[in-house]
Image 1 (cartoon, protein in one colour):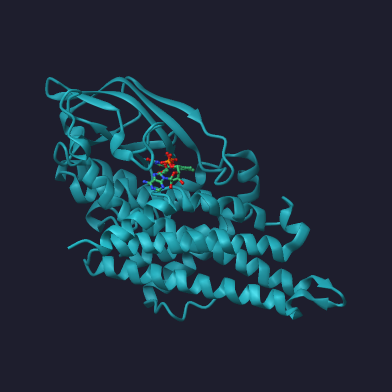
Image 2 (cartoon, helix red, strand yellow):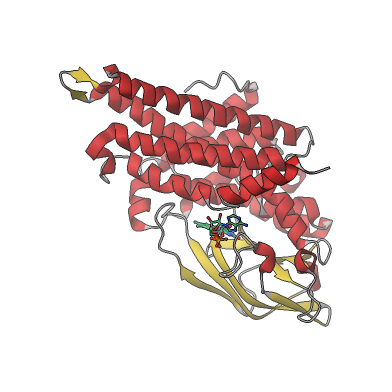
Length: 386
Ligand SMILES: Cc1cc2nc3c(=O)[nH]c(=O)nc-3n(C[C@H](O)[C@H](O)[C@H](O)COP(=O)(O)OP(=O)(O)OC[C@H]3O[C@@H](n4cnc5c(N)ncnc54)[C@H](O)[C@@H]3O)c2cc1C
């Protein structure tokens, strides 16, 4: 599919080619099996790291590639077009924990965590949601209580992507006291590592899509963390999480564009091969119109995504554009993958054909890192912001 509307630099084209070839060679042959088994080979994470794809926006002084957001998203779209489960591990790691440590961490925290994360020794996870606090994440109840110069954490985090594989988990917890709640200002961010006493990996979710990506519950049972595991300032954790989700939502949008693009490419090919009434499907106007609408929406989603990412790279505020981009790209992915199944007809509904996995994988892009309803709330709120 043409990228003509998004002018890439020579370096971005090189990274795109690298990611595309890697995805086709190392991921594509296994993606269906990993989906069936509900587990990817963990070696793929090491291979991503060897390419530098786990430290894409981490500065070179912390062993990252030091690239901009656009270049990172170009690579992420390529991985997503082949396997959205591998892509979500890469997206969460690059967009959330590494960026949070880079942006809000102390120099000692950056030096301690970022090089090992960029090398892929520690995969990153992000634990904001709880069983009773999803869209209303500030209603979380996980509690951190001061204990000498450290903290004791108690509570349960829900749906943590890569939570059972992660070496570093950015977890948000309340640091206000039960009788003196301060809402979102009573939440702090902690850098959690899995060897801590009281850290438990709970239930692994059985999901509709992204089946090869582990989504787990994490519980903290009188888990003691030291003072140097608090990220930034006490009481700022919710703000850090929300600011980081501006990056994260661009990652989800790139994932959605990748899924949608794959569905279109399969559909274009299938419509040329499959014959009914003595003609290939592509000669029927009804099918041509579907393909045209799919291509148009994907091109628009990509143009919005890369405009938002360029704005971020210029240092401009992107909260609204990031939400618009995620909203438009995720609804595009859901719509395009539905149309792809229609073009494939009965075969589209079968596991042997690729579009049913894309359809299942697309759905979650409308849910995580803020549902489509929440994105609309963010966008509308910005319309009234002074
Ligand atoms: C596969 C997967 C991976 C995930 N990974 C992570 C992760 O790594 N880390 C993490 O912290 N979380 C993760 N999540 C959690 C995800 O971010 C939440 O599921 C999401 O924020 C929605 O919360 P909820 O599921 O509790 O839905 P709810 O908040 O209960 O919402 C249910 C419905 O009500 C709507 N709704 C809620 N409030 C409003 C409102 N004010 N106005 C209008 N509509 C509203 C929602 O849009 C939705 O349609 C993951 C989820 C999934 C499914």
